Image (spheres, rainbow, N blue to C red):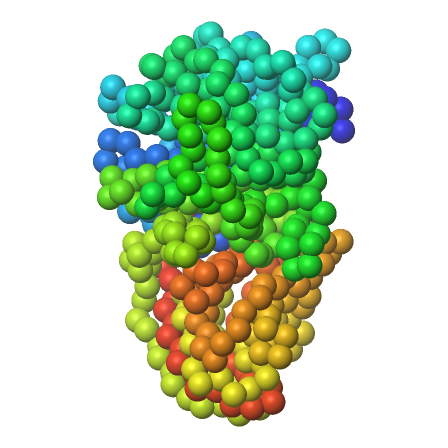
Length: 498
């Protein structure tokens, strides 16, 4: 693909091209019902997630003209309840001297009744050398966005390559601070801290001093926050090799947790790196603190450099549902925000005991639902459920007591995706109780295990007729309790699509 095509602006597309692309997307059988998704083209990192002027504001990386990573815009959607999202259109359009080749990822913070949006402007010179700038745009309560003509941070610090991006800003009692994802000259990843008294004048402080030496070749989308007396650094390291059940996606996202960051020395005393999500399709998470004091996370439900079945339909990817983060015994726990219950229809409830068999139940079917399936008094070797099932398709979640492992298997989930990275994902688990909390949309499943002690996020691409739900045990018995709610439509694509 030539550079002119890759870095096309939306204004360079004709009305006829956009009409054809919109029609192609509308005919896709895998459009979501309650996940944020692009009107056309490619969505990736969530950006600028914050609570401002009485509403939740969420932006995302968007290339409208194709499903490859081209000229990136910031697209704006907002919500009063974290459930019903209303599209507001483009917030930051690239093409100016500081973002001539894309408005890359960043974050938002409220100051003086305005929303300050700090992002990386991507530029290229005539020899195609990259120069990143850390830029600023402000949005007022009317939704009007203005870009600042001068960069906040114009230069790459000594010792780092041009992979220097994704500022995440926060406010301490004494200072504003931001952390930026970086690559050192020796091609290892790092997180670099700047500080500012006013969000305009920024001074380099240095790297966060972690115990992760040579841990991947680039750290994308870093995010630091403190909760319940703990410091948490979230980031997406690229270049990790698989280790046992971990690190099997092309790129990973996870966290380290420990004592709060020492603001003077930037020393961070922490534990081991742990993946935030054990599924196939989770990357570039971003968190925010809302007006209720909750720490909420949203991530890109996708992976870079992986082809997806919707690519040929003119669109790709979506965002995860919002998740509240808590800390329990040194672990970050993720739970779906309770506002999602607004989407629930009437519950369907089942209680049963099954022994070495597969059970289906009348009415227990669907393509868009929330379901809680609990297994009690597990005496079987294996228990589990199969969703979006038909004669030839199913997505299987099973707990193997002998192996002490919970596994998500999408080898028969429909159109394949990412086969080169494996078709199963697993994590360690044991015990005689199991709670599976699922959010199933037309082309995705988000699984919260045992109240968020593990989470699996995955895209799946079954045929529309694959609606079955099966509950099973192997080699013994278990008591089951199932509650299922069909979920209402919550996606708004009628306003401000472009």
